[in-house]
Image 1: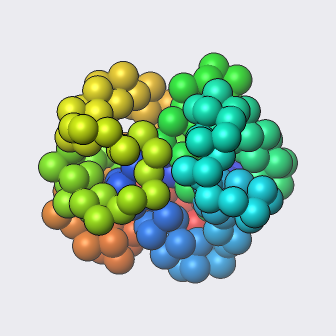
Image 2 (image 1 turned 180 degrees about the vertical axis):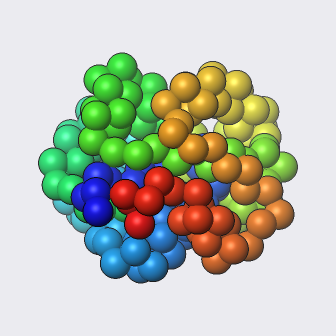
Length: 173
């Protein structure tokens, strides 16, 4: 039995936290969400960090959170959508875990994020266009990093989690 981390990557609204939680429970592992970790650590929400420190400041905090979260094994970790942008983060993710890309369409993201006012990158005139641009720049990175890529559109979280677990290498389950 491997104690390697299982790391979920993908765009905001792809279900990383929901699915990660289910996988962690079923595999008897600790679940960590990097955004929640940062919020707990700082005592403020991500939007506030963006307001005060800008995206650069948030990305610095995110990199530090990943270093800390990945310093232990046997976890399921949901990463922030943009955490893959930095080369150092990419290297760390690859070294410290098995990476699952939750591949989600912009339509699915729009449905899931329609009422979410906490996403700093979506506080714009045209959220759909913003999601399309982000996906266009990040999807190739997600695909490059992924040990497993899974389409999430119109799939129930529990069934998707079960499918992912079934596709994991034997040494991870």
